[in-house]
Length: 369
Image (cartoon, rainbow, N blue to C red; front, side, top):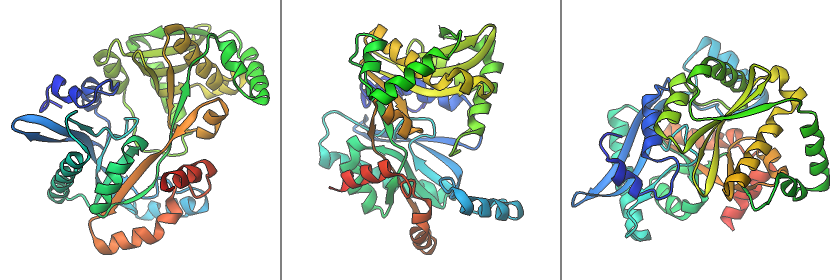
């Protein structure tokens, strides 16, 4: 990030919570297996377009589940590099979407031209870095037309990513929020909240004194994740809170003296973003920790007049039930070897996230209509 000033980078991303300071904290956090890049286009010295990127060894079976995943794991015991490819990708493993920003004076044709230039430079970088794949992680619905025009021109294919869930918080109280849910869900939530027990909540700007417990809860949650990509470090949590202060906060949940859950969040006057949730699964079911943390975030938004609660990716079926709306994200990819790329295109249906997911299938259909 040092090649860009805070002001010039943020100028391309007005109001964005994951801004220069966030990416700078990510860069400092030493996530294992990732190297950070940033592509920018200057004209007459002025930054006109920019996008973060990364290089990693990517497991092509990341989104494969069931019997096929089990078979692949057996093969990997003999051939550890099986289905691993060095990949250069736009976006970030720890951002909500791929942040592609432009100077406000540019129009659609300008942006196509600038993005084409970035793709051309990425091709050269991939070659010099010996990256066999070029990808884009989580392009948002708001920029679909631009990516459709440009990524396809560079022979990348699109498949659904995990959608972003957003809840509109236009309630006067938590009770008003509960009343907005279906009768069955409302009844279920009230039962869960009553059985949550004596949970104490602390909102913190610093967690250095409890970082060991935070990492324990994070590791417990990561072990149960359906899909694995990045592994967060101690530095990630402490540096994001330090560098993005006061927009970064952490809600901590206690039973007596014991930390049982934490939730790292980013906030401004318009949006609360739920970045990472960690829980003690030995007590999570008994105390309905997930639902308690959800309601606490809704309560926080109501108290502070924040109109949008963005709960991110994952568990989108449950988030729909809790009143959220889904916004599509897309993954784009291409192997630089045309023969291997042709084989990947044939195998793609086995790895698509929407193959057994009606909500993702519906979002894909809506985008094509």
